[in-house]
Length: 320
Image 1 (cartoon, helix red, strand yellow):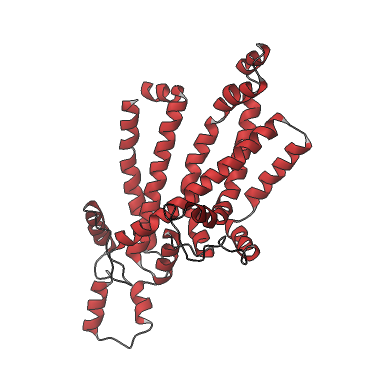
Image 2 (image 1 turned 60 degrees about the horizontal axis):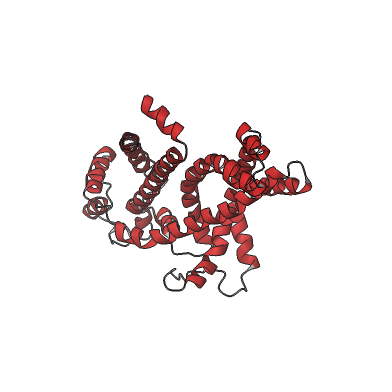
């Protein structure tokens, strides 16, 4: 197991290097620049002033040179300074990151609590009316855009006290009940579609596992139906759900950007939208890099959990 973990950790290095390259160069392909937006509201500047502004906005050097300097600063823990506020980028991100992570975690939990039971029930009642309703739920969940569902929720619950955050963040330690209440609708907006994915994966996996010989043997031995389903069938059927959960965790974190704006949650997503509108390169780069790094780390944890749950994965990898 130790060799497997080391190999997976080493594989992160080229991935993160590739992510840093993509993030840095793609951000600079956004039309317009911070300097152009700044000069749009200013009077004409002298050539000397323009040179100084280019230096301040990081436009006085070739892009490859800027990339090397940026990576060097990252290795020292320096994510740069915001072009709009002049404050260090990292503290702003660290202040907002827990809110985005909390929203993503609640969305995952909500999706799993909805999707797994519905998937199990649908597999046990295949081709019945209940199974039909669950499949309709899956189709609707996959079809509804997150932002559209979030907008409907804001309209429907706008007069309900405490259900719409609207910028008033309350931490879990400060008031657990209010915290869960304010995160419920945003989490549902993000997790609704993923709940449909989990339901479909659970249903299909359960249908396959229920046909296995060991499940039939457990039934023939007279084991209670609940024990057969929960211990023998669901335990093995849950493995694909673990994989899809890990892969979608990063997507949910990225999807929280729009949802945070709709519900006015002061998370990393709102900061990202503001930075994009203002062409604040250091902030955009840092946020995308943090999200990408979290995505890679979540996938690593998913692989490790899957290897623990299914030793065959680990054995095959060690033989290579």
